[in-house]
Amino acid sequence: MKYIFITGGVMSGLGKGITAASVGRILKNRGYRVTAVKIDPYLNIDAGTMNPAQHGEVFVLKDGSEVDLDLGNYERFLDIELSAPHNITTGKVYRTVIDKERRGDFLGETVQIIPHITDQIKACIRQAAEEEFPDGTHADVCLVEVGGTVGDIESMPFLEAARQMRGELPGTDYVLIHVTLIPEDTMGDLKTKPTQHSVKALRELGLHADIIVGRSERVIGANTKRKISAFCDLPINAVISAATAPDTYEVPMEMEKEGIADVLSAHLGLETRDIDSSWYRVVTKEYTNRVTVAIVSKYGIEDVYISIKEALKHAGRSLSTEVKIVWLDAERYERCQLKDYDGILIPGGFGKRGIEGKIEAIKYARENNVPFLGLCLGFQLAVVEFARNKAGMPDATSEEMGEGTHVIALLPEQEGLTELGGTMRLGNYTADIRDGTLAKKLYGEPQIVERHRHRYEVNPRYIKKLEDAGLVFSATNKNRMEMLELPGHPFFFATQFHPEFKSRPTRPSPPYIGFVEACKVNKRTK
Image (cartoon, rainbow, N blue to C red; front, side):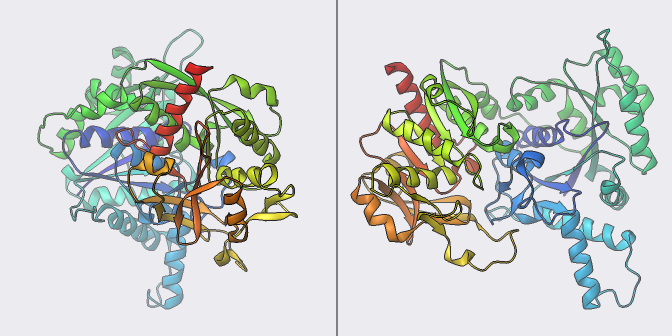
């Protein structure tokens, strides 16, 4: 097993996750099997209870783990499926060590950061790295992204574990990539001093950067690279320019041009292999059409719905159609605005805020034959809207929202829970699709597996009344409703699950393909 550690300096939010995913894609294009680990230094056990407006999207893995959005990037770039051990948090590490201490596993030792916490961190990294792929094989290379910025007090034990691993592994089994900011001053000069200070902080922790990835708005020139090379003690070819790209999927190609594959191969003793460029051809496919989609939500922050944004992009690429997204505040948009868009999407979410605005958007889409895609909460609100306006239940609502006819109700297993974290219906579940439905046309299979994250569902008491009024539940999991559609409408489709979590550039999600195709038709016929 070869390990590539990715650290960050100067400031957070530079794109360590995209850098790590891009490095993995470069190696995968050469036939190496790659896996990934994300270390998050926060004390939370997982991302499930964190505010997405502050932390970004909560991504859900196949086993139901609620994790950092960077694991979504890993899955999309590497076309793999990860599990809980691939997201390591301070909370997980400390809880495990404290549980061991309570059991007496340390035989009376004084439990300390070194060696007990760092040993647990290393064990977690190795466990994730050595996890089998579905075909029984193992990874050749494990990417380990250390969240936060060098110098943060929260990251110290993880960086110390990384330092220890460097001493424990053969020289050709370990590489450290340091991602830093190369800012531009008012005169247009790229400044290297922040990088120098960041590398100094790294050295004080006993770590040495083998490769420096410099993030900047424009390409870093030779003179700047020479300066970084001289002050940071590494060869000039190990200074990689990572200018802001038009699309994150273009980052691996830009890093290829910078020669990072040769530097990695030299450090890790990897053999030279031909590049499979098929993935690059997919992600650079030219657009010949363009549609505009309104996403009506209470958050107008792209990172909250990054998987939706990427799934629309994947579907658009497959249809040679650029998808422009307009974010509409569910509490403030005007109904007349909706006529300007080729499709309307209602994403998942929790809580009462903005609910009536979302329901109004769904009603507009239904009554005006505008393509509509509802996801999770969007699925539930489509049921609420139909119940109110077509099924004779004017006070229909969700149990989550308060008093009324609860056409959406709490899952039985959710009643009486005292903990919020990790207790929803999470991860992979099957759905059986009815013949003769739009769902069957989109998926082409009688049974599918998709990822879930919800506490509420369609109340079985009202299913017949809804169906008698014309709503079709086109897929189920036992007695749970998984998809709905409206016959006679150009595209009125919603899913209780989150299909965006399994969408890939080379394998777009079927509901998203159907939605974007319907948006194209709607635009042509306006």
